[in-house]
Amino acid sequence: MVNMTLIKRFFLLACAGILIFYCCTGCKRAAKDPDKKTSDIKYQSNLSLKELLSEIEGEALVCMQEKDPGEEINPITAADSSSYIMFRLMYLPLFTDSGKTMVLADHLQKSNGSDYIISLKKNIVWSDGKKFTADDVIFTYQLIQNTPDAWAHSHLNFFNEKVVFRKIDEFTVKFIFPSDYSDGVPMLSDIPILPEHIFYPYNDTYSIHNSVFWRKPVGTGPFIVRSYSAGEYYLFEKNKNYTDKSVDLDYLIFAFTRNTRQNVSAIIEETVDCTIIPSWDRRILNKKKSKNKSSEKLYEQLVCTEKIRFLGINGNRVRDKRLREAIFYCLDRELINESGFIEQIYYKPEYSFFPQISPYYNSRLTALYSWNPDKAEELLEDFKLDQIVLTLAYLSSDDSYCAQAVLIKDMLSMKNINIALQPVKRYEDLYKYDLFLDDMPYAGTPDIYRKYFSGEYKTNVFGYFNPSMDSLWESGYKATSFVEKKEIYDSIQKEIVESAYFYPLSSYFSLIIYKPRAQDFIDMLFSLKILSGLEPQK
Image 1 (spheres, helix red, strand yellow):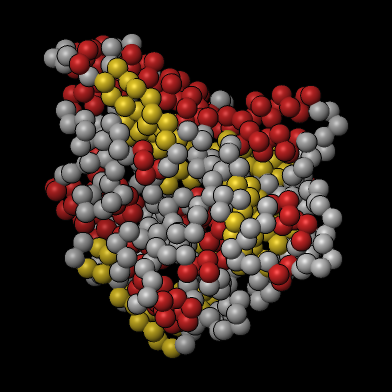
Image 2: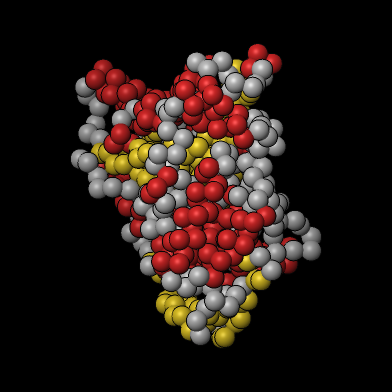
């Protein structure tokens, strides 16, 4: 599912996307050609990964991910974890963690109720040497506000009102939220800032969906894109103007693979330094480790995906609420979670689209649509089930989706609900079918969830439509006290979950496996809030 709230969150690594890092400082490389230099490598590279590794000069690390995001993506509309991580290494945000961690911003203060004044750090320069200023900030937020399919578009547009941006001076920006808006900081958090001097001249010539973001690689992050080989890799090089020198790495390569099992083999065979795998692959990892006793010591760490796995129903295709409810009553949440994530250490059951860690989570929903086959049978009495075949779509690249889809089909077949399984390669293809397994990113503020359940947003993939809910969402974002907000959001959650479009399963963790020499790179990913997780297990 689309979304990137705080984009960090939104985006933070994913096991279901699935993002796999594989750091290769120790990969075998072909002998270098003395007549070739790194400076000879073109943006559109025809070199194979092996040839590339033989030609670059300096320390290199390879990160492998499951799919090639292609050229036609950008940090404004990027909707998957793989492209998000790349952009976050190039473009830094003002702050992360809803304002708790300053990045490009020096500090922020609230004034006049719903206004925020943000002072920028004065020592930041873009990778091309130009100064980072308030113009870049204004340009980025205005671009997002005026781009309907931007992942953060709803953060800056509230019903009939918009956030207003004003430049105070070269290093100070004022954000003016609609009156009575209680907390705008999470709406501004984790949004990567773009260089106005690079992208503004392209506004009249190119659309927001072109590859200029790659072809004009200028950023404030630790790495900048150098070249791209379709279906093979992206080559990033060190940003020499990046102020944090804790990672002594000249090049970073994002190579593309077919599945995470290849990475499990690579980490055991000592051809890579680090990989992030879904918990499903833990059993494969253990089996390979037992066969290869000589493998180097590995560190492990749980990585929070900050997503909720759910079963969605397309209301435009399954219109009868009784059938949707019957489907949910056929499901055993605990068994489905175990089938996809193996052990409870890797997941936590969820009962709403607000995760249990949210202070606005409605704890009274835990019993809603609990497994009840008798109730399902009662609801199905008037249906001619032999004439109904529903299609359940899931991402073919992730074994956890596949395992859960198979089990859901079996559970529904117990009540004669016929299910056809449909593996797909792209997220956007999921929503063409009757049922779909997907993930919803955490949101830093409850208002952000509105875009999943409001007819005006493309991110409403459920076909859910209830005009009366819009007034509740509006009341929620205008409420000033926690108690009032909590009451409103409890009502919103109850109505949406009861409507039987969204069946929450669990939040879950991935597992990062790495060797000691990859430690600095891993530390950088966590310090930039690209990853979040628990304490390492060594």
